[in-house]
Length: 376
Image (cartoon, rainbow, N blue to C red):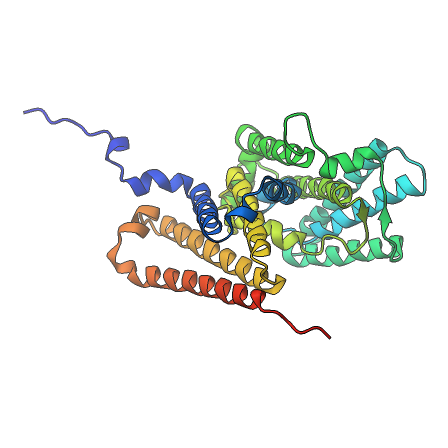
């Protein structure tokens, strides 16, 4: 009697089918949870058109940097200097416009070139001087921030031409704010580069195994420098967008850009160990963090509690993706094993405890936020 061979695609479990999309499903599940929670407690304020527009504006500022950071982290790198790169690029553009009479387009292009130059310096420090990414970019962050302080001398530069404010907070012809169009366009470009070009394939190969990539003829150091130049350019673009959004800039601007961007990329599923990237996941991570921070502001929770909540989400996400990668390296069944293995009750309990603590912190912060404080 003839046996019918079962299609392996049909025989796969639901967990195995979902596993390639976990980088997108994870943040999307948290986004849905935020929407449901806010629909229950603050639907009128949170779902106003003006508030949703503000969420998109806040997220758009980080989209170009998150896209570029995806390439850097995928190659097992990190860039902690993007905040100072954005600030210094914005300050230099402002001085060119305000004090030297440069037109806005020319000044913006020079700012982008300056960002690329700072990215090139970062890449050379890491690849030529063999300084670890973490230390090298942290040191350069101090250098760039110091240069910005020297140039600006404590001044706040404000009131820029319409082109700059249009990039930062204008309204485009497609019923979306101009910075949202810029941010989404950068994400589309990054997705195309990652999936359709040699640079994208080399990025994943280098992150998976730098030694093997070098043996196959890939110039690993050169491509790592390219990633940092790309990162510097996108950080400068974010500096221009920030300048236009505030219609002002100073050398101390963008102090937490690096942490926010890295958090969004990691929450979106890009592996800190290299070799795994998701531009769509990074977009979802940016939206998640912007929605979460906006929700905490809507609930009148203090900034310190916002930091606690952001840190808890990042830890939970990194722990999940690290677990999945460990299962893959050990020959396990990844997501399907995580769901179905009865031996993982301790893991489930730990995850439940983390979520319970996060919810408890939110409730405590909400209660404290509602208290009236005596004046004087």
